Length: 180
Image (cartoon, rainbow, N blue to C red; front, side, top):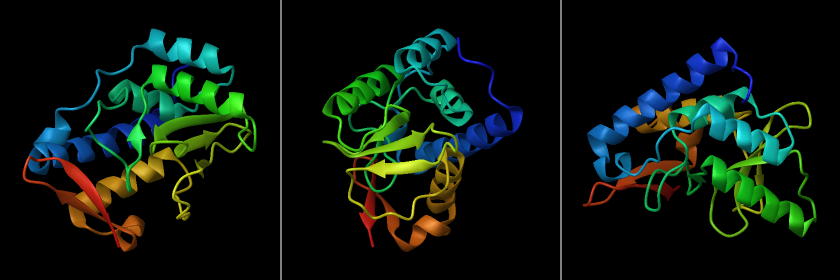
């Protein structure tokens, strides 16, 4: 099993997900219904062993809230789908096998389709990065910041992400992101 995350990280990540989930239930119910069940401590422990790096606290907490989303579910702006523990292992192996500039201490946590991923850099700082994605840059420092900024964008249309993205909801109640 993975170590117990720090309380301050748990509070931030869970509060951000709660705000996102509430918005989805109220305004994008089709998306709100597409979450996987939370990852168990055993699943998170297997993920950590498979990757061979310590998982960051923020990712452990996040997986304990939402273990990824099913097809057609929630995406972080502009179109990064949160990965499940199993999908993280699969994506990390795939990217490591390709070599290139991928470092085995990067932990992918969201996929933008194809080679595009958001990852947490476990070489020391735990910084959030983008690999082979749209290359828009300007990502928040870490996963808690990204979740908080996404919640702020959804709930008030403000914050650092508001200059680049705007949430949209289609007639079926599914969330999408318009790029500004």
